[in-house]
Image (cartoon, rainbow, N blue to C red; front, side, top):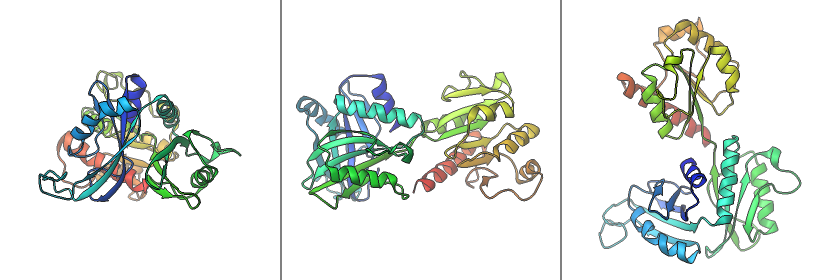
Length: 346
C-alpha cells in the first residue's frame, strides 16, 4: 500500500482505487490488495498477473465521470477464451470494487499514511448492505492507547452505533484484525476491513559492495532500508540510492540514533570482526523482529565468543539455497526476512 499512498501524496490528479473484496478459489493476490489507476494512465500496484488490469483500466474514465463505487466480479475458473478466464485457468473468482479517490477518500488515505509513518498500523473499513452497496467508509488507527471514550478515527457516510461498537471491540481485541468481510451481529450490514501495517525497517550494518544488491532488492520488496557504516566512502546516497538513510558512525552512535523496535530487521555484514562484535553486543539489548549475521558458523561463534548462539538470531543468515555471489546471497537473505515478516503477521 505504501507506493499508492506515496503517489497520492505527490499528485492531486483524479484517481481510482481498485480493491479485491473477495476471492473464491486461487488468485494472484489476496483480498484486501489495492491498486491505483491515475487519470494520466499510470498504474500503481497490481491485482493479478495481468488478467484484470487492462479491463479495469478501461473502466476508469466512466467511474471518474460518474463518481460512484463500482463492483465487478471476474470469474477466472474457466480455461475457454470465450469466458473471462481467457485461457488463464487461474481457478479463482475475484470480486473487485473501484472507487474514485474523492476529497473524503484522499483525506483518509493521507491520515492513514501519517499514522503508518509514525509506526502505527491502521484499518480502512467500508460498510456494505447485504446486497453489497457501499454505505460509508472510514480509517482508524490500530493502537489501543489512541482509543478513548469515543472511537478514534474518521468516517464518511452512514456509520451506525453497532458498527462503531464493533470497530472498537475489534481494535481492542488481542487477536489481530484481518482484511476481509465481517458480518455485523446486529443490523443488515457487513463491513470490509483492510489492515495496513507500517513498512518494516531494515538496518544494514556495513556498506560493502555485497550490500548493494540487498539494499536494492529489499527496497523494491517494501522495506524501509537504512545503511550504517563508520566509513564515509562506504555509506552515502550515491552508493545506495534506494536507501532511505545512510548513517555514518561507530556502533554505539548508530544504535543510539536508531531507537530500535520489535518491528525492525537488522543485518550485520560489515566484514569487520571487532565492529560486528561491538554492534552485536549493543543489539542484543534491543527488541528486534529479526537479527541476521553474515559469515561462517565458525566466525559467528567467535563473534558471540560461544558456540551457543541465541535461537532468535539468524546465523548464518539467509535461507539455505546454495547461494553464491552477492546477488544470490541477497535473494536468500531477503527471502528469509520476508518469511519472518509474513509469519509474524499471521
